[in-house]
Amino acid sequence: MKPPLLLSGCRLGGSPLCSVSSLCTTTIILDAASPADSCIGSPWYRAFSSTPTCSSWLMPKRGQPTKTRKGRPRVPTGGSTRGTTVVWGDYGLRMRDHDRRVSAAQLKNGEDTIRKRLRGMKYRLYMRICANIGVYTSGNEVRMGKGKGSFDYWASRVAVSKIIFELKGDLHEKVAREAFRLAANKMPGKGLCNHWL
Image 1 (cartoon, one colour):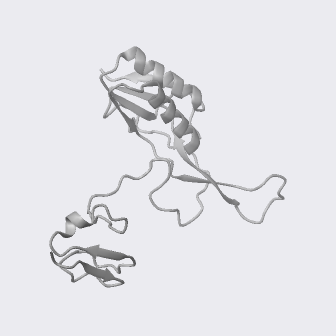
Image 2 (cartoon, helix red, strand yellow):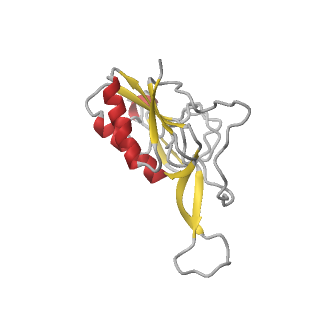
Image 3 (cartoon, rainbow, N blue to C red):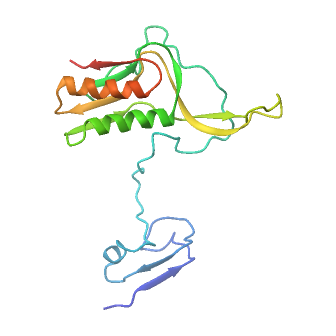
């Protein structure tokens, strides 16, 4: 058996073992005979792939360079129906009463409620919105001025008739409506379950 190769603090751009042109900051131990098999269980091993990693839908992929303003939800004009129809699933939960800003914690409560109700069933849940708007607040009894305030939580601007969740699977319609009803009770405003025919 060949001795393992020790790479520490080296540039892996021209190495035949890796095709990444960045400076390695950790110690990687590779076996000369089978470099892929020896590093799978290693805590220092990082699989390099061009496939994007699964990011969280409750916060943006990258931080915001500037503080976002409060803004208003998008108002569909000219007959636009973007985001108001069920695309991937069979059932959808939409906001039907008024546009509002929904926090990431409220979206997480709705997701957990749906998953708890459908536990043990075969389904797939799609999230159609992302909490990518930063909300900044000042403390209580703080005088006016002196800046916008510090970051508080992530939120999403949800327009009227915007689909929030989609559900697909071998489910009865009454079960899906019950799950969406429980989720709508956990979230602000009134929700409406839509069925894609």
